[in-house]
Length: 389
Ligand code: RFL
Ligand code: PHB
Image (cartoon, rainbow, N blue to C red; front, side, top):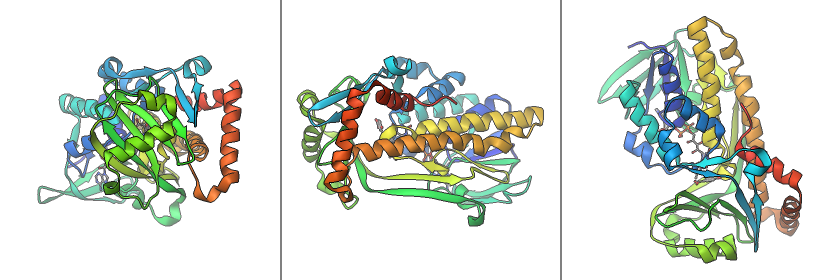
């Protein structure tokens, strides 16, 4: 088998890139090691910034998002009794869209089937070969048979644990990493949200987030130690903790109910440079991870594929190499800014056991400053709605 571009991974990065190239007449095959249902069952991002909204619109896939998604013109930072409003619309002129990653992925998957974008699910043993040559190829196993797929380029959109980044020799890149000493315990429940906008709360007991998927489905998170086990967190314990950490206003309005999903995710900041090696390009979580505090992960995957699709289209249509030669540098410039914002919001809002009382007072002083300064709130708002491409 032969194609122009093999894409490894059918998460949001792989599917968006696949659609963008397919629409431009470039032949693409996407290889995914899980089933479509499994990919849809992963509960992840909830907040889309302009770059993601624009990409879905550009692909003519934004109709359901605009109908069912919730435009949010602001969010809150909470510390104890106080809610600090970050008025995104007033401070930046932009809003964000609350529309789950599951729904984005479903829209992309449905359109792949109807538009003839080839996605092969449940492949095993994906391996990348000859990535430094102009004729790289990928081997994989499907239904017990071995296959080889030849291409001009490979796009590694296979997330943090996928084989693409690992195919790059150690000497050809550098990884930057910070692992946080805690995780987020998430709960999804079919109950109305406790507020119209998201609440990011810091408390002596740790961080909490009140988010939502719709006006009837809520998503909440609490910071937990990495040693915590899901079995020790029955729903009632999570609701009690959320009531404490989110403060009196939110807790009064909180409706509780049985969970439909619960999971613990570790928090990490990670960047691999460069995002290209030979004819392999990395995009999305394959190249970088942000802690979820800034709601940036999926949106960075979108900006990567926006840059990469333009570069590849220019190569195939006009024979120009400038886009592919500058892809890594261009994408990384935006990645590092989002890394910085996600890291700073994580450091501000979480409980760091090793930070001691002084560290806690610094966080409280910074929140005090943010509450009183339009300039400080503008910095947060500008980063939250997303920096321009
Ligand atoms: P994905 O979604 O991980 O997709 C990678 C795909 O590659 C497949 N794969 C392979 N395929 C073939 N062969 C192999 N050997 C393979 N190994 C892996 C995987 O099965 C998978 O289908 O990466 P992608 O496409 O780069 O997308 C990135 C986003 O998923 C991620 O950044 C966001 O979910 C992060 N994130 C958030 N981002 C936001 O923009 N806004 C948010 O509000 C937000 N909230 C979150 C989040 C992530 C969270 N978790 C669980 C880490 C909240 C949480 C709790
Ligand atoms: C979510 O709804 O899952 C969500 C929202 C905002 C974040 C992270 C996760 O910053």
